[in-house]
Image (cartoon, rainbow, N blue to C red; front, side, top):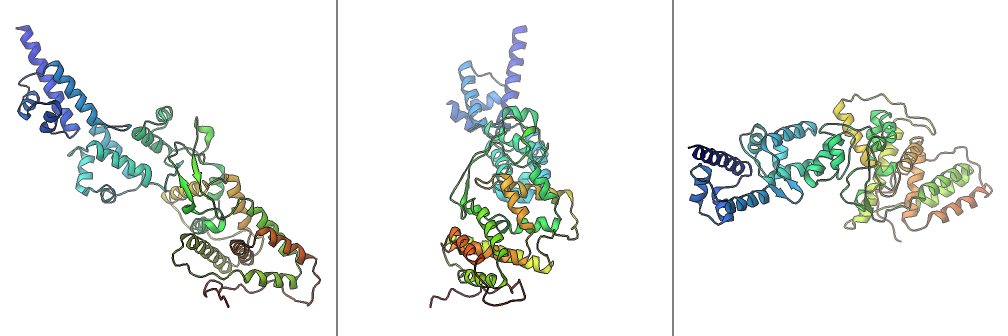
Amino acid sequence: MKNTEEKLKKIEEYSNWLAEQLDELCISQSELASAVGKSQKTISRYVNGETLPNMWIRVLIDDCLEKRSVSDSFRHIPSKEFSDILLRLLEEFDVSQAELAKHIRKHQKNISNYIYGVEKADIKTQKDILFYFKSSGLPYNTISSVHFGTQVQLGFLLYGSNKELAAKYHFGERCAHSNSVAFLLSLPTSLQKLILDNVSAFVDDYLQENVIYFEEDISVLIDISLVDNCDGTFLSASPFYDRDHFGDYKNCMKLFWELSPHCKKVMRSELEKYARLEVPRQNKYDLNFYNHILEYYNVIGYSVIHSKKRNEPFSIKEMEENDKDKDKYIIAFEKLLDIGELTEDEVISEIKYKLDFDADDWYLWMLFVMYNRKGNGIEYLKNEMLHYVNLPESEELTENRYPINTNLMLHPQNDK
């Protein structure tokens, strides 16, 4: 009698467990039957507690369930736990159910059902959702101090990476951002927006299309003193500008402002000969450069409107911002500071230097960039500057500034 009770209890426990696993992993009885070589009717008997499969069949069932619960390094997450994670991710990244549904090709009702436990997400759907937040919820491949703990957890769930960090940093936990980001956040909000809207004017090496990123575990843009074993890897294609050109351009700027008024006029006229630029038709390289120069004109116009004078700091009324806006700026600045082979210090150094520019300085720097882009060589330009420094004036001029030529990009190059 006792043996019979124990057997019935075993059958009941197994049937409940099997029914729960099939429901959790979204496996039909017919799918399981096909995998273990039994009929759907036999599987139904196992699920309904009518009989207990023998040890060999149980091994086959376990093997089938294991295969369906693992995809690469990702293991299926229990529905209740996944519901909590999904709700947290939607709130943290400020993503609507409709937006997520569109990206993973589901209906909004499915997303709602996953959250409230009405419907189970299969392993592929779970993986697609987590990958969306890992890759698309932020600027491409950015590791953010704002979402640091969440990104560590997503990396662990999806790829099994950063196991030790995953034990320390949980969903929603932040990590201190770097001093470079803190400096950029200290600027007036309107100036922060100007930098982010015209990144390649403030940092000439910043050209996203010329940088190829690979998966990073941890970025060096966060405060690495708070994180163990930080490392990031990427491969950079050849940039438009060599990193030494920033120093060369600075030397040219210094030499230019040492010229006499007449020599300034002559030098700038020479530079403008190389500065006309057609709207490119097909060449992506040329289009990137054209957009790069447009950003210079944006900043020149901003400097004129705000009457920015040379070597005077910007003094602009602060725009109101909320915490979400600030978080977006932090993420964008961390992405900005992760440029190819440039260090954070090099990026900040260039931004700080250009923050002292007036409209004429911006225009002159743009002319240097265009001159170099035409293949003339910045070293040759420096030699020309040195020549003009010692050139005697042939005429007297009363002004040190000349009108900025805003028509350089409005007409095609005249080849006559």
